[in-house]
Length: 362
Ligand SMILES: [Zn+2]
Image (cartoon, rainbow, N blue to C red; front, side):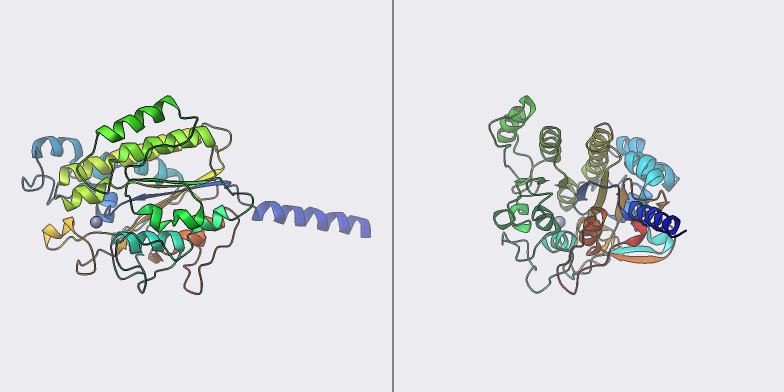
């Protein structure tokens, strides 16, 4: 009898062990720069889509992005989010249902937002500009890179050239391919060689931000070649086109980024190292204004609503709850600890660290 009881206890503890272990072995954190929740959940904005002040060819834009039904409209803008993540993952931040996601920093611009996402807490005292200052805070990426099992398996690809400072490339030892950086190393693929040649020829419209296809394809090539376990990708075009007042290009950039993420997801789901073992956490660094209308171009503390953001997740440990339609409040600072929890780790950046979003993990 005692023997039976013993075997039974072993069986139960094994069951508990299996239940507690996550399937996620790889984590991809992906950000859009300043993509509003308004576009993510409602598609193109009725007040902007045919405004010739912001759009070059209103008729063409209306044809590509307009439907009277916002559910159709958002699918036209971000088909991967609405056909795949909304069916297999979770989407937070539709304020129509009371699902709120906010910055907890009070700056509502890029460096403070990315610092909050990656280091797991706001730091208004020290991170209050976009200056190229090495981040004094430890990001969850650095934390991952300091785990023996993940050392050297963390990489970042970003359109904005401030990220080597936000991630503190020097201290963390994480390779950050940012801005107008080329791919490095002795074993460059043909595609990397072509990207390296083209990035010197295609300057793009902005000084410190390259066009997103470079960031995306550098990341894809690296993932295919090195199979990293932790990847951070920061796309940037949405914010810069918005500042430039080009609503058409802002929409095109959002749709293109959606397609980039689709390509990445389809790649990981078709390769053994990643398939059904990879979680994508996707968010944005800040929101933008809505009223008055022209504030869609801007963000920062003076712009009402620029702290309103969104959060999406898809992966083997996440229940398919789709668009979250219950009231709740999440914060940007919760991303870092949640990312670590998916990987079975407990990250902390001090007493203000945002909590794990438990609802994301089965
Ligand atoms: Zn901006």
